[in-house]
Length: 112
Length: 113
Image (cartoon, rainbow over all chains, first blue to last red; front, side):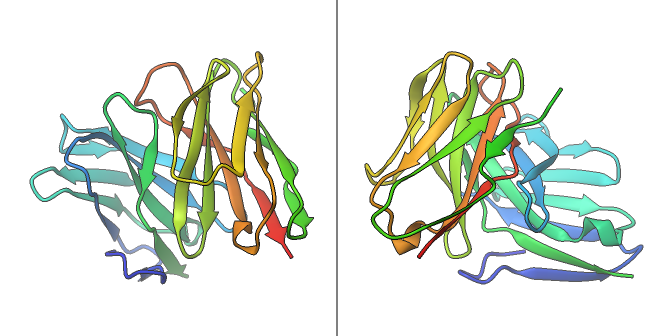
């Protein structure tokens, strides 16, 4: 899921597969990270978050992994469903500030 | 609790006009942030208001302004619209603690002709 400029990277999977969406963040001072899902015509929807004192956090069908050494974040979706089709954004937050800095996003397409 | 609401959902304006967008945060949330989303630039931070004061500001020209009312509702204004202002404008609210999750509204789609 590396950004390739103006075009969103796309991940195409089959229903039931596991999906992994990657994100490289830029600021080593960031200490809070969030994954959002955005469906067409809607605002970003919170999926899962993780703080910098953790390297893994699990939710329902989703897991976020954080590697601070290489400034890399990933979102794993288990048993991907067609309803998971959307654009996924990672966002980072720097301690002391409420501003979120967003990545470019990855489009996930799930085929039945 | 009701989510973040934004009005209007869609707007069409012409170059040179001005526009005002409105956002009502989640009940109890005192911080409102505004973001601009375009296909080319992605999601970019405009500004944040907390307790009626602008707390943070992104790198946008002075044509973009905002304010927050005592009930935490916020408005943003864009004056002298340009074609490049066409975008989805998103509002997000969060509670009092910095670093908490921000919850987004559905956005206002602005088209400048």
